[in-house]
Length: 141
Image 1 (cartoon, rainbow, N blue to C red):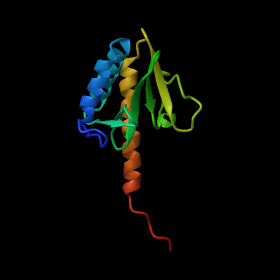
Image 2: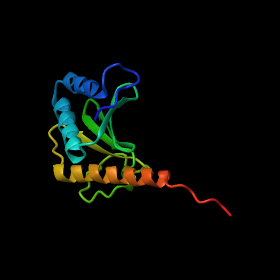
Image 3: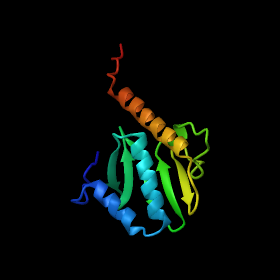
């Protein structure tokens, strides 16, 4: 599923395709591979384009962003501090109260099974948060 960006007239999926194509090195290959794993883990994921050019994957809220820098591809999970990470994929932003990130350097491989499990866990966390917000609050007596 694709959500059209408010800042652009193109669908977010096309803007993400263009970003990947513009990275004519290992970063484009890596971002594309991680995008594919996200979609495999959660076929109902929504792709968005935010913050002046950041790919975002959402499902009942943001799951993660995909940023590319000179030396890394960074996947930042908005609620990463609340996720179990037994495979220790998170290797960046470890001191924050909410976010956690995975920095991928050239030549590094990510445990695909563990990454997809992390995506599914983020989806479940967002879904449970959405359900909690949807429950009517009892009136105080």
